[in-house]
Image (cartoon, rainbow, N blue to C red; front, side):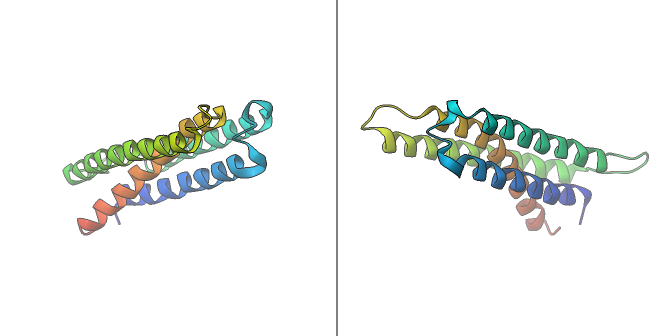
Length: 145
C-alpha cells in the first residue's frame, strides 16, 4: 500500500469520525429548529472542526516528504486528479439533493429553519473530504494498489 493510499484511508477515518459526531450534535435535542438558542452546540461544532482540520494537519505532518524519498509520482497525481473531479460531482449532487429535499419539506410554510442552512454549510466540508478520500481509495484499488 502506497503512502498516498494510507493517507487516504486515515483521512477517510478522520473525517468519518467528524461526520458521525457532527450528525449526533445536529440530531440531538432538536438542534435544527432551535439553532440560534443553543450557543453550546455552535462551540461544540467549532471544536469538532478544529479537531478535523487539526487531525488533517497531523496526517500531513506524518506523511510528509522526507529527503530523497518519492511520495507521489505521475500515477498518484492522475489518481488524485480523478478523485478530486469525482468528489466535486458527488458534492454537487449532495448539495442539489439536500436543497431539493428541504424545498419539498418546507414548501408549504415557505420558511426553512436557519439550522438547516448551518447544517448544509458544515456538512459540505465533511462530505467533500469524505468523498475525496473514498474516490481516492476506489481509484487506487482499481489501479491495483
